[in-house]
Image 1 (tube, rainbow, N blue to C red):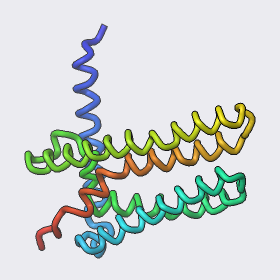
Image 2: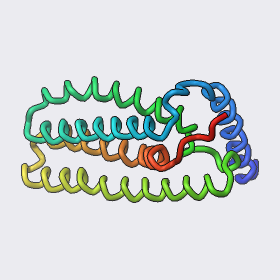
Image 3: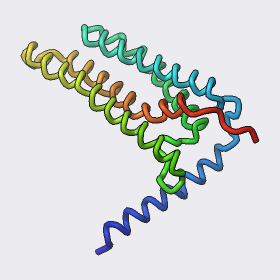
Length: 177
């Protein structure tokens, strides 16, 4: 039976190789978007998509499921902005340990800690909505489950993206080459 630490070590080595390969692949991509000002534009765009997702989930909670049609194009915009931010920030929010120096590691861990706190706190909203709404309607309103699901997805996306958004917002411009 293989040692658990060995399996974890091999997985971390695999993650590091994959990360470095992708970093090399995208090193010259979107070079005009790597400035702090442009990264902040991407972060603001992501925040706007999250706001629209939250509004759509609340509108669906009031029984207007047609609002969910807005969800699809907003999700497409989210995916594009998220990929762009990941590329221009070097995926530092989820980089393997061995690819970061001490300062980058401290920044990443701080951003991840904030992201976890954001996720935990935001998830309380859909949880409370689902529990209270279900009890108040006698467990018969399907809109509650649908809207609660949209709220939960939004909260998880915000929390999951928070570390990269924090790092994209706070990191200075890269050194000129």
